[in-house]
Image (cartoon, rainbow, N blue to C red):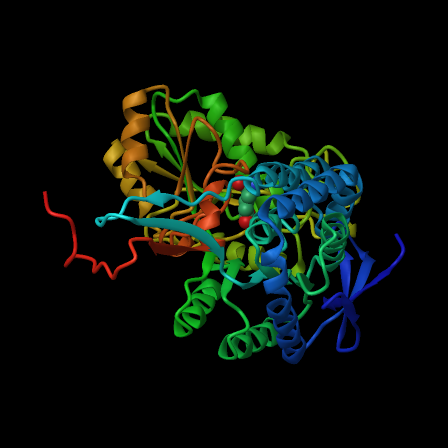
Length: 506
Ligand code: UN1
């Protein structure tokens, strides 16, 4: 693949200069996919100025016409689906079938919101007084800063950018630093497909420090009206605090330690399949990835035997082939996996080989050349305890813990204990167990007889506790993030009618 030079785009113009960083293919780390020029805080502020300046005209475009722009974007993404998916696979090592699914999520999001341009409903509301009418309108929030992670380099940004544009907002997007080539391709499709005027959708590549400084300065100058952030809980806290200091409420989609409960009434084969996919799909690097299996003690041994076998048989390796698990997305996540293993191994039973896949530490049936990339063994850790670091913290890697329980109360207590609250799952054929779990789990998303991963574009997505501040994306619900309600009070009585004082009595 030829090297591409990627830059930020502010007000429709590329911004070169600054430090240049190479983006490599995690499945073949010697391959440079592209080079990206990192911008500084001042460039971020210029992007915010540009978004702010373009917002009034963009909001003046009738919503159905903005919906049509979203429709064109969706079609262009669909026309370029394979090419974009191949780029996702090349730059972050996501297996190609998953990458295709990820690109499809943009199409689904566009499909949903193109019609929303013709709805974007407000209400008519009766007044306490005669000859007076009350209305509500959704109005755009203004210029939105979108900061996203690289594990879903195109689907998750579209969850913010599509509804925000549809609702009449303009954007400064700062994607993850390890997926710049995919991000630039996404930006290009959106600007071209939607015919977006300059300044409506700005793209900034920058490191965390410059981004934070640029964001802070933009907030101080009133240039950014809303922040959407997907990433770790630690950075989410900082973003949330920064937003709060400016009396804003950020849309935060953070980490998860997602539990999967297996009751004695579960279909065990189905549970094994669900645990395998959500534990090791995307090499465990989804915010919705499985953290801990909470299994009833009576079925623990049988589950573990079947799960162990399934993990051993799973295809791992070259993400352009048909594999369950490709490489780690980036060196920093590989390092973290190693760090966790160093902590886990002295204390726990780990099933099968762990660590990096090498000639000395092989993986049977490995697809391709393990030495070429950031390939690791999937780790299943038995005998986890409720006060273990592994039980309490997100690992963002292919590590699944297993803990046992005695009754459903204990299982639910364990599922809630880490204090995250993104996704969760229960495997049971007993509806009573399923509904008790649904009723008492603290997570924003609950799967019954399905894995913890696998959001759909029209169902609310989001978490509670350490997983977010209760904001929700997807479907109509996300419009509450990117619009504000305006109340209109229209008096046609020709006199001053005072609320409460002139209220009509029966
Ligand atoms: C994320 O990992 O940030 O539900 C989002 C899922 C995905 C989205 C995950 N479609 O697994």
